[in-house]
Length: 558
Image (cartoon, rainbow, N blue to C red; front, side):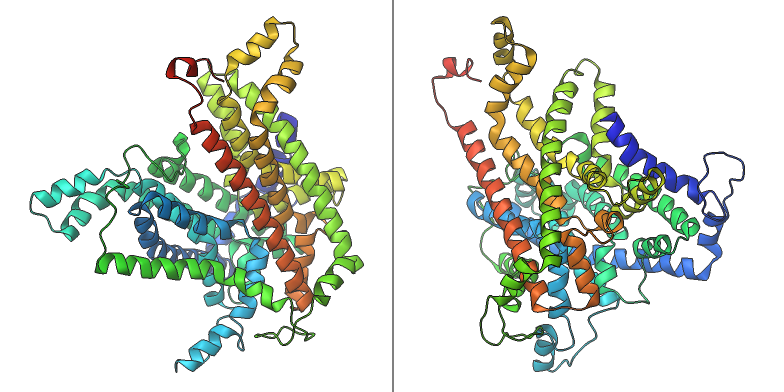
């Protein structure tokens, strides 16, 4: 783990920091010649100021719109019966699995001047609007991506509120609005601020969305960094990257403390003190309004997903909506064109390698971390390092690994890409594997040791078989993470591209039904894998809740 993170995570970030301290952006490990010229330029250069202002304003608008849409949805979810709440939870979660590139492709067609959205606006008398290649398109794409994050964080906070508190306020003479404003909102104020900060910092690090849906006047920090690095102008790009990284760490630390996420709490759809499912929110104007907003939110999340399939079976050689005729020729072309088949082969092999490597590392690290229970500070440090790649903006890791791998001569190699993708996927894999291993009764393994089994044999024959469903789910998460990753791969590959990089390049050059077919297949794979993962987890959790013996004998169960 130390070698992996040192070579493919910390060294790339150090390389960016060192370049930012050189006026010309060159890389040197000697402190002589360091200066803050690149940081000063962020404040005095009008172009860089515009990039910073545009990034902050776009992220702020996207975050506020996301909150306005997410709050009613999360509140309704927390006030519904358990079965309905779970169903809405899954509807919010499923679009989160779908490739961001596929959704951006759908928005390119949905928001085009001749697309269905402008057609609907013209039909109601508003007239056609410029919704693409400007800040409007960027905000729409960002809100679609951010909504699940905001809903799940708010829902986690709302599910932990004891409804007896507001009922007590009403019994003392408060109206429903007064109880909501004076009792309910103060209880979740910290989580609201934390959710806003989390979504804002995620929005400032967006690369693909502004690169595809934005225009030349809507450059953000991430797109500016990528452009400057591609032109070998590392100075201002590195300084911007360091500022973004420091801001990300600071905001995540504050937001994590406010939401409780950094304390190890998770998002759950049940709670010991949560809303009484037996006394759900009564039907009335408030509930009708909440349902209206929630239905619109679900429709907005699923619109780009549902829109991709019709575009892939039309007979026209260009994208037309509604499609004319029906054909599967575009799928056949996508699966036989050497450009796409080579990209598919590389993505599959890289994804499988990442999945295997992540599972092995996750098991070994989880076992090691468990032995550090008597050293909580070291244990906390190790776990924090594992999760660091989730916090770092992906564009920084992309340009940093591009720089480092170019220095050591492995840029563009298959295994170099696998290592970086493993860094990105390992936190999610570790989360699932560690949780499963922590639930295994350690006495079973100790019993195997006393019978003469080696530690490796006991692990392979006793421990691993009990967590196979979790390992399967974790492997799927790792594969999907690698399969869908485009930003790092964009800087790691040249002619030998992965499928997402090929997809991104095709989107930048122009849409076609072949891209729609590729998008539909990408979406199907992720949705099927996601459904399989959720099914495995559901079966596992139901087995864990099923009583199999009397209470006294349950103590001896693994």
